Length: 513
Image (cartoon, rainbow, N blue to C red; front, side, top):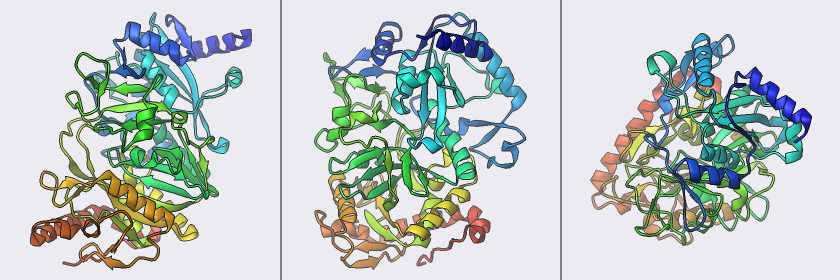
């Protein structure tokens, strides 16, 4: 390592109050991190070579425990409330000093990376972690700089990940996580600074160069549906939409793996190999083979791996203007159509609603599917008011004419506990038909309650699956449940009514009473 690099890093440690830490592992090779994780931190190797790690007490996100420092800038720009909790600058300084003191004499792992595949919008990140596998996770999820660029690397943001430090909530507050903290930063910076729409979505590109994006919360199928061998993967979770197209924020994937099936999800299955991380999983007894159906620790089992573990991933992860947009809703009511086409007003309505069901384990305390409304399919990560993002999407739809589809990846034939999850094979067939243009010429009928356009036929999908009411044994029970969801959607919309005129989109959808 160059003497100038050593001097620069030493100076940075002192500047950050870290001059008294113990051994520092800068930009450690992934194999070395795996060795340390196995030797020191109770991680294990699976028979496929992946690193099995355990997250401890917390096996899902805690979105209400997100704090943002309230200062002269953020006081008037952040949408404060139940999700964006204010954190005093003095309180932050005190907590920071306690954390750096806690690291005195301890070994730390430091890694540089960046977010955003498009150079014009990149931010430089530096992570300080106490555990090797967290450093490996950071390496996988974000974009990895070339070695020759590290000498001049200057971080815009530094992430401290010190789970051993026990904050006192009444004094210190509580802070979030590696991946979504960066997404939150980009959600704050990009709209105002660059007029870029940040999106909680996956993205793919077809052979003809057509781009598609898939909005949805965890557990709705973003990663699974974007891992499509017939299309190239741009990214599985976070993207920005700028004037000429979209770009991935990340350099890796974070796939939910409960019930992972090699036949249905071959790309994700193949990516779980040496170097990949698997979280909170169990082995088949007397083996090192992962039991993907074992949810004894949590339903929220996951795997993190670099994006190039997917063989047809785009490098760099940049695509054109989206031709098709899919809103993925895991409907626990079992009443939404498996696929429906939305006009612009309906698209804005369902975007601001962000309706889905939280799947068991994705957040702390969720043990069964629970219907939720998460604005823009990502409310926990939005520091600005949701209508700001909805307005940007509406402008882009008006300008580019992208086709928007609502996809129900949840229940059919009845609500949760009565019906069944829609078959992934059918969902893939419907999305493939939309992407190929096969649904352009078919007949559509309006849903009698929601008013959205349902195709009457679709290649590879039984006709009866396309109309949700026909899948229920009792049509009256279906209508009652559908009206229940329609009412919940309207109630959820009420707080946004006063913003509709300035957002320039229609906030009323006429439901049949």
